[in-house]
Amino acid sequence: MMLSRLAPYIKSHLPIPIDLMIEAFNTAACARDDSEYRHAAEEIMSEAGVYLHPLELSWFISARGTDDEALEAIRHRKAYLTRAASLIPVLLSFFDVKDSGSLESVLRRIDDFCRDFPAIKATPHEKRARKEIATGLQRVLRAVSDLAVRLDELGHHLDIEFNHHKTANARVPELDRFGDSFEPFLADLKRLSVVTEIVLYRERVGSSGFIVTDNRPKFQAVECIYQISLWQNAPAFVTTPGSDFATACSLLYEIASSEYDVGLAGAINRFAKSASRKEILEEEQSFRWDNSDEGMRAYETDNFAAVKERTAKLKSEFTFWEEIVESRDWDVFSRRELLERRADVLERLQRTLLENGPHLVWGSQMMRAHGPAFEDLEEMHNRLVKAEIALGRSRRLARNA
Image (cartoon, rainbow, N blue to C red):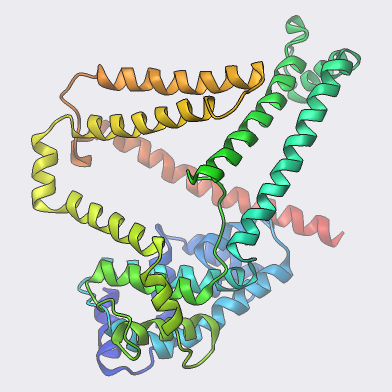
């Protein structure tokens, strides 16, 4: 058990041997045995099989990135794992880690933050990033709309050759379906304009719009420690400088950045008032209720609990589509597409309301017949490893030719 192996170091605050530190982080970050991937990576590049994050192993082995990128990933993770070997014992002592499962969750969250740290620092400010994305999508919208208009006018010069080309590429004899390829392409191009408008609208109304990474590393360090503190019930969240919470934040920041004794009081105060803290707290409270004895009893007693949850989400989604349809005067094509989205949600809502019970509640009720499917997945995973190794060799030979 990893917790029992780390416990003496957590108790004494003595540095953890680097090999044990690497093993602990790699085990926590990997959902399955990745020894075959690590062996293959080590044969390609020294230390790749040791230091690359599990999410980077497939990327590296199949040569989807360059060797220079891999070397930088190795250098970065090696550096913060080396710092972690000295600082993690003190940091973990602030958390009430009672089992190996909790330990893996904590180490996985710390690893994610440290691994993302350079990208977080390099990211533009959130407001600037959102503005740049909106500007870029407006350009996409104009370009796609203009292209769709041009193809409406001139597409008859292209459609026959386009259809032949698609058929040849697919190696499928579809000549009896003449004209079946260009028109759907043109419709999809117009739909891309509609989808862009939807994403821009979601961003304006604050409904899951752009995917933007915040560029405030200190703020995100505080957020990381706060999430862990909720999972582990320690340390208590306070804004007092020098508290256990503040010290834990500084230690995490040092592991990720190598900057010693950085003050995070300002970031802690900003986080205390932020929407992020409220959202994280609400998610944790909901999770605890769902997994509490009382919550489980309520869920088991009400056989339609899952249906009610799905119904509430679909009603909210239906309201969104009603609002976007009425938000402006849409052209005929766009309005029809939006009404189709609304109709799709309405149909799903009606089907949900008409569902009959009883319903499966817990995973333990899954049929044993599903077992062979999981065995097939394992076999597919093994075949994928071999395929990625072969693909990587081919790409590297081509690069060196």
